[in-house]
Length: 189
Image (cartoon, rainbow, N blue to C red; front, side):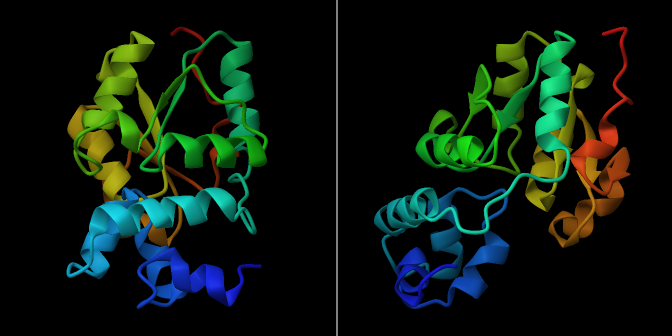
């Protein structure tokens, strides 16, 4: 459970944590700060938001079947990556806390100059994997992530939920959870 002081410091002390959380998925921390409180220093407030997110793991959990899916991909020798709008420290801490192994290809906010919905992160991941973007399947739960994956030319499986927003109709396949993809992965890659 987050303490009130953590929530206050999470984004610019002027905002309630519950107002910040819905805007975090798919956005870099400083972009969230700029969106919510444009009059504040987005860089320093974003750094504080990242610090809070890396330190506060209460309630952080993997989507159902996500770890099993990445393990299946690894066992079959299929390349996979994670593209996140979080910083490398935040992503690494949260991946380990939820049972993921940190993948060989991890593209974070630190690796791109333009965040989602720009396709830069997904294009970089595809290049590092050695796979054309059109041969990639992106599993996304955020509207800006779906738009970024589409702009990169990738196919998209959307994880059902409010985070998909208006992009819910733009996905190739909707699943309740990443684990729903287990057993559906093509073997002729």
